[in-house]
Length: 305
Image 1 (cartoon, rainbow, N blue to C red):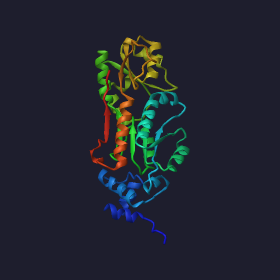
Image 2 (tube, helix red, strand yellow; image 1 turned 90 degrees about the horizontal axis):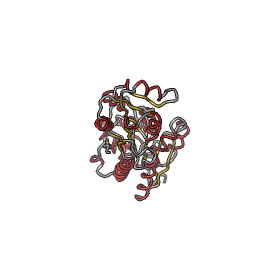
Image 3 (cartoon, helix red, strand yellow; image 1 turned 180 degrees about the horizontal axis):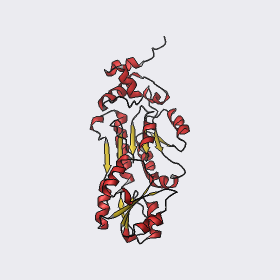
Image 4 (cartoon, one colour; image 1 turned 45 degrees about the horizontal axis):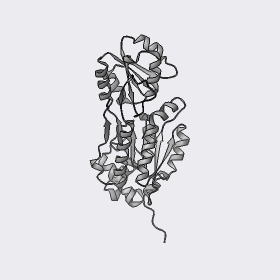
């Protein structure tokens, strides 16, 4: 006798919520405000009952695939800098998850629609998303019914767990080390309302250079020659060393290996290894469905010298 197919109504009964609430949660509806606890109840019921809303949810329906996704945005504009910035994070995640019995595949969103279709057909037990803007995060996360850990990105939704730098602490430490409050910021293109707000309050948007094909760093530096600079990332730090004396800026680096920069260049470290360790720790807890309420929704990595 064929087993009866689990319906959304069954999930709602198990979770103790309405069918509409289940629909809102699984379709990531922004029309209704659903509490974090209610969402967790719905996802737990989905997993327990083996409800399969689409191909993406296969891993919730029964056997674990022991496969995780690491999704990173690699387009032609930022491919080199993103690979340099995040290679050690991806490597560290793969290494540590392998110890826990999971394989992690790296998936690029270079072609968003095509790659998302490929990703959605994989039976992933969990997903790490690295270095993405808010609009991309919303598009990607609406398709997952598995644990998601966001690294170097921010989405104002308690359903997802985030690991990101404490940017405010970074900027304040940099100003202390430069012994100046009159600073500018050189940064790669980004998309984050949270970072926008912090930069506006700590630096001032009039003092920000965003590295794009249509912008000129040399001209910006001439216009801000009486200020000292905070440089986000080693790649931009190398460019800065070609233009001005390195005593006038500090580089916010992501890795432990600084051989690319001059030895005399000041730097602040936001450890990629620490980001990866936290992300893996969170994912391990989520996969076990143990003590989830004890996991902080946002982990802020503190800067060090």
